[in-house]
Length: 270
Image (cartoon, rainbow, N blue to C red; front, side, top):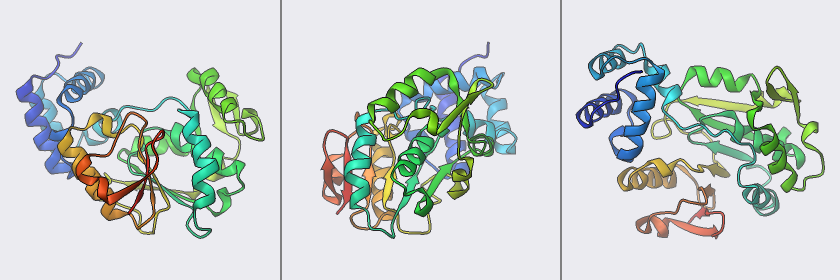
C-alpha cells in the first residue's frame, strides 16, 4: 500500500496542480484533500510526493489525476424529488429555444443519463443541448460508451419508479455484461464535452439549467465563493442553478440569485 501524503506534501502538490490546471486546488476542504490524496497515492501506486509532483509537471499523470480525484456519482436519479421538480416545474418554465443544460463538473455518467431520460420522457431530447465539463479523456471515453456499471441496478430502478414516469426503466436501459446501457445511444451525440475545469472553459451559448449538485461539498468557503461568483458571471439572467440538497449559497452571494425551490436548493440568476 502506498504511503499517504503529509500536510506539507499536500500543500506542495496542490500548488503545482493549481498552476498547471488553472484551478485553485489548495482551497478544497483540507479533510477532503487528505482523504483523496491518500486514495490517489494508493490507486496510482505513488511511492512518494516528490515523484508524484514530478510526474504532474511532466504531464504523464495529469489525466490519471483528473480521472481519480473527483468523487464519482454512482446512482442514477439520485434524490428523485429533484428530478420530479425538474420535470414538473423547471422544464415547463424554460423558453422553447433555450433547452440547454450544463454540468460544470461531470464526474460520471449517472447524472447525465438521468437528465437524458427525463428529457426523453418529455419528448424534448431532440431539441436539447447538453454541455459537460469533464476533466479526463479517459472519463469522456467511458461516458461516450453509453453505459454504467449495474452494481446499483436495484437502487437505480427504485429511484426511477419513484419518479412516476409514463414508461418503465427497461424502456430506456438494457442490461448485459455487468453493465446497463442506454437503449438510444445516439443521444450521447447531442452532448458536447468541454475538456477543462469550469473556471476556464464554459459553454458558448446561453444556458437554461446548470446542474452543479453535490460538488461544493468538497470546497472550503473561499473556493465556494469563487465558484458561485464565476457561475453567476457565466449565466444569463433567470438561468437556473441547481445545487445539492445539502448545499446552500453563501450569504454574500444571495443577492445574485433568487431562491426558486428551497427544498431542492434551486436558484435563478437575478
